[in-house]
Image 1 (tube, rainbow, N blue to C red):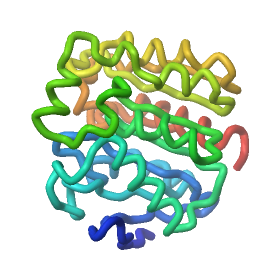
Image 2: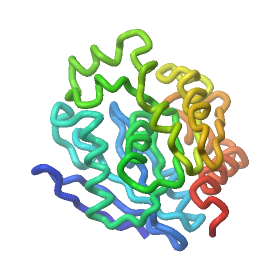
Image 3: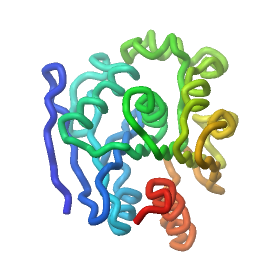
Image 4: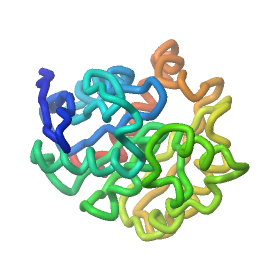
Length: 235
C-alpha cells in the first residue's frame, strides 16, 4: 500500500508518500538535487517494502510534485523540510534515513536534531558549511564549484559522533562525487556501531539501482545490505 500525503511548510505544500511497511515505518528517504524527486527511487523503496520496511519520502521544494522555484530553497531548507515531514507524519524514532546525493548530506545533518540509528548514504554529496544557507542559484553554484569545496565539510565531524549503523553506497564511475567522499564518510564514523562502503561496479551517479536491477542477484544483495543496516538485526 502507498499512501499519498501533503505537508504544509512555509506557505508551500510538500507532496509525499508513504510506502507502508508490514514490519516498520521509521525510514525517511531523501532524494537528491537536479531533476531528482521521490519517484526516481521506487526500485529501492519497493524492494524494501517487500521486506516489510516502509518508507516516507517527499519532493523537496523545486522538485517533482511539490514544484515551486529552487530559488525558494537551499540545502538547509531541505533539512528543515525533512524535519517538518517527520513531525507532521509522526515518523517513529529512532529514525533510519536513506539519503541520495544531496539528500545524503541532509541525512547526516538530521542526526543532529533527531535520534537516528541507521544511515544509508547513496552516491553521497557533502558541502562546505558556507554553502548551507545559500539559496539555490548562481551564488550557490559558485560556492560549490570551487575546487574541492567539499573538503572542509562539517559532515566528517558530525559523523564522528554518530553511534548507529552506517552504509555508504558509491558508484564506480561517478562523475559527480569523487570516491574520496564516500571513503572519508566511512572513515569519519569512528564511533559507529558498524560502517561499510559498498562500491557498485560499472555504476554512474544517476544510474545505480537501475543498473543493479539488470542483475537480480546483485540487486537483491544490495537491497539486503540496506535492509540489514536499517533493521540492525531486528525483524
